[in-house]
Image (cartoon, rainbow, N blue to C red):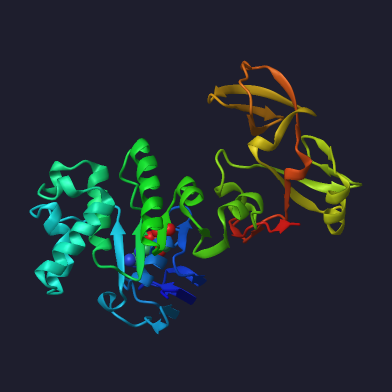
Length: 364
Ligand code: ADP
């Protein structure tokens, strides 16, 4: 079974930049893992260490029971799909897909069978004699995947494969990749900065920031139970609203409002009495029957629901109401929070320069 075990991986580039700290992950056979995080968080470096395109500074990589830490890429039995496709312009689609098999000197009939099977899966049979430049972006992306499929690798690696495509095509390619994953039942590791891709594609998401894993879990776990303030605001769009305040006499007290805590919240927050905490509320968990005054700045109708932007005092707040609303700039509304869906976090730890060195841990 092609399981992947990634153990205590560190990457320090020449020159001393540490891009990845102690990355640990066990990927099950057939699992679809998405590495997500902002630019520079170390996700491509991690993927490239798994691929063998970057040396592993420290740690171990085991694929299908075999220690691959020091193996060259060609011996790892993985296939990588890149964002720029890396297709050969002078070759036809067929030749592009056949290329790695030709290099391996496989028999002509075997190559033909594998290429035709991949073309069938990817709906490329009518395109086999074309050159890449005669194809659309989506088709080129499929050829790039075809080149990976024909090799029947143990693990597929994807490095931001959809970021060159327009929004609509990204949506349809996302669905194609999901179908492909089902059809092939393959182990996949996929890198993106796009939280929507992570939520829609992953069996499990690995959310990274500053070279460190911040949380690993299913999409719903990361959405409903973010481990810290980073994951809380990175996953979900528009992002979670965050309010700083303190716990006092059974209430959350901020400069902007006071909010009574329910029995459950009082219990959880009892150890924090008198201390500063952060309250997080997703836009869709804001209600219109509370007592916090919000000045509307913007009303965006999305069809099924409305994003209402506004200010509570000096603080920008986004609400997502499940109705068609028609507020105008300057309207005052009264909002509250769905108490079952309120999140609390400790304050982030900052270094002497004021930069966050550790995100605020979830309190639950
Ligand atoms: P991501 O894929 O999340 O955008 P990367 O893994 O590409 O992030 O980069 C992580 C960090 O490592 C960044 O600070 C980046 O500048 C640095 N880095 C990436 N590649 C190199 C390299 N070849 N040499 C030195 N530093 C690098």
